[in-house]
Amino acid sequence: MNRIAFEELAALTSVAARHDENAVSRAHGEGALLSLRDVHLSYGDTPVLKGIDLSVRRGQAVSIIGPSGSGKSTILRCINGLIAPQAGEIYVDGIDVRAQKTDAQRIALRKRIGFVFQQFNLFPHLSVLDNLTIAPMRVLGRSRAQAESDAHALLAKVRLADKAKAYPGALSGGQQQRVAIARTLAMRPDLILFDEVTSALDPETVGEVLNVIGELADEGQTCVLVTHEMRFAEEISDEVFFTEGGVIVERGTAQQLFHYPAHERTRFFLQRARGEDRAGRALRRA
Ligand SMILES: Nc1ncnc2c1ncn2[C@@H]1O[C@H](COP(=O)(O)OP(=O)(O)O)[C@@H](O)[C@H]1O
Ligand SMILES: [Mg+2]
Image (cartoon, rainbow, N blue to C red; front, side, top):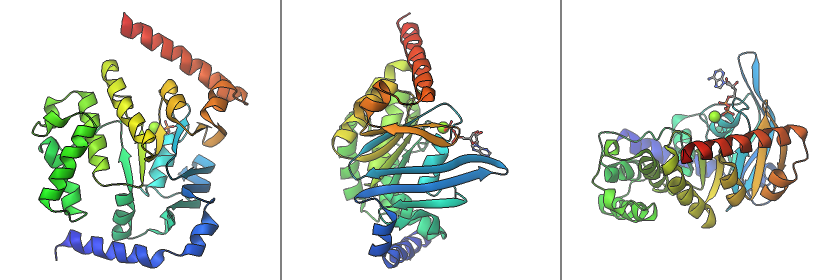
């Protein structure tokens, strides 16, 4: 058995053993796929997350908005176990993220959590099709035929059916990001984390990427989005969290948070964000 296959097997066994239903219901609000309780994280002496509480039910789309440096990316990295907070609880579908200490356990966790970044991180030396099939074949043990058939279906879904043979370097930013989303979907994750996935794109390709994410949310894909696209966040989010300085200042439905913010800091942030939105659109028209 090769090393990866062995690690996967070990990981799956340990996840099955760990699945304690009582712990799940203790740790979660009813029906939550993801929950964070009082999560604290510091880099050295600098506190970055100061008690984050957040939960997401299966099928929900949730957005995190807030100024740069407020801890949004750090929250996402804690959720998929890329970094470990010093205190608090994080559960994903009953899995205690902080207890996943071995490489095998972490691999098992990350199979269930997709992460789409601002930089697409596609393999430049692989075709679009191979970018989509490599992980399902190596990590999930899919046959090539199965992986390729899935990949073609996903490329059609992100409206890139004709790009299977292309290499990432030949695609626009928006197309590459849609490939990155399809690649994430190929792992059939329970939860997808999107970290400012349109921030590095040319303005004219932002819409095509947001459309794809919007469709996923409509179909009931559970997702957490960090985004500067306020109108998009308002449209697709079941719940919105506003962070500043490592705390969640305010949370609510999109309607509440965007139209009736309770906190002065939220109002101030939204005013500025809308100003930038208008300036950006004016620039794009010019
Ligand atoms: N690896 C790191 N080492 C030290 N400080 C970090 C590190 N990563 C992030 N930070 C700091 O943590 C804070 C929150 O960062 P981040 O989560 O990236 O914010 P956001 O995504 O909201 O812009 C920032 O002040 C940032 O400088
Ligand atoms: Mg960030």
